[in-house]
Each structure stands twice: as C-alpha cells, then as structure tokens.
Image (cartoon, rainbow, N blue to C red; front, side, top):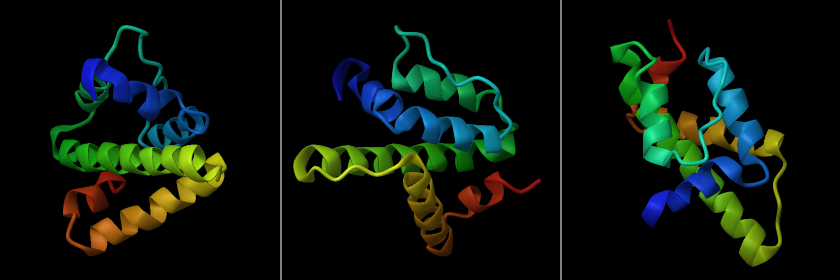
Length: 114
C-alpha cells in the first residue's frame, strides 16, 4: 500500500471514523483526526507514543486488528455489495480480538486493563 494509501482505507472509509473513534475513546484518546498529509504509519506512531510503554504492543496488535477488519469490510462492500454498520463492525472487532487473546496475543488482552 504505497504512499500511505492504506490510510484512506483504515481511516476514511464509511464506517472507519466511527469505529476508530469508539475504540480509541475506550483507550482514553480525545482526538484521532490525522492531518491530510499524514501517513497511516505516522498517525499510528503518534497515537502509540501517547500510551504508557507497557500498553504499546497491545496497541500495535489492536491497530493491526482494526485495519484488517476494515479491509475485510471494504472488500465485502466492494465485491459483494455487503455493507456493515459501524456497531456491527465494532462487535466483530471485539469478537476477533477475543479470539486473538485466546490464541495467545497477551498484550492485546492487557491493553484495556489498568
């Protein structure tokens, strides 16, 4: 995904803003709006640096999970005409996150714990 092209998919598809806003709200972030010139990597790193060091690996996993789910939703919409609501997409992210934790992604499990 050259030139930060994945930023559009990860942040600017129909459900993405609501999904990111809710997930990051749960982590205590107030603003998630990237600048138009900011790549996905720059945006992610700027948020990551605001977290305590022990939560950063979990945040990395969470970002990968959310981007993956948004990518799958985009493909379902594009190729099958199936659009998911932000609330259903959030629920699928929660379920998939639980599966990742059960599979051994310990840092993701600790992300939302104090």
